[in-house]
Length: 283
Image 1 (cartoon, rainbow, N blue to C red):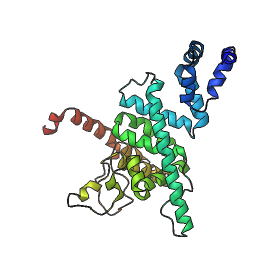
Image 2 (image 1 turned 90 degrees about the vertical axis):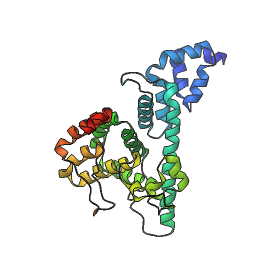
Image 3 (image 1 turned 120 degrees about the vertical axis):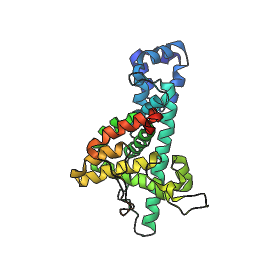
Image 4 (image 1 turned 135 degrees about the horizontal axis):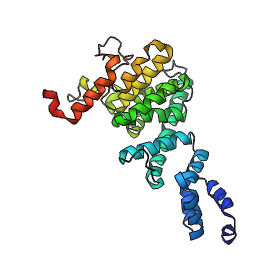
């Protein structure tokens, strides 16, 4: 340890970056005052921590972006306020673990299909990328926090056709084919699996779209994927992002109320005003 402390700061920074996990680097920074000073001085904007994560975590940049964004909105922090590492790191650990679990379950299901030589379900992608999982999670989060929807629209609009296909397949798997344990762990509602009613308390009304973030994600991603094949329907994505039902691929004969897409933003703003001022609904 004494030799380590004799190293110049630049080398000590490299030592930090060589740590296998951020937790290891944090523990190292607590050994003595010198190492702590180097850590604090050179970890502005969590630079060292992010370097370690991106080097050791698949799609680390996307994982960090999601963890920071989720932490910020749940803590009601300003968009220009730096989120402390100790707040978003636990979220990062959780979301990376959920991502790995989802991809492993998908791969296992794909293997079973191949081994049994049966016709695969609508899962065209051999192995979805971690990036596709974080895209799904951004959709789920945007349902809960509407202030994220403009950014989601920009991101989904620029997402490649292949990435959208990955996200759609993975989202479909998590909703329909994943094990019950995996479904619960991901936070997907039981009723989204479209099982037969287990009791008289279960109603078909529970299957309506957009009752939760996973239904919302299904519609947003499905609409975005559809638009890649039908560019003339691009206006539907904005409606979907705002929470309107636009993707009825599961039941094309089921009638759904379609808004005037040219007025969708005005409709969304009016709904927001009504939510904030309930008395307006009676006018």
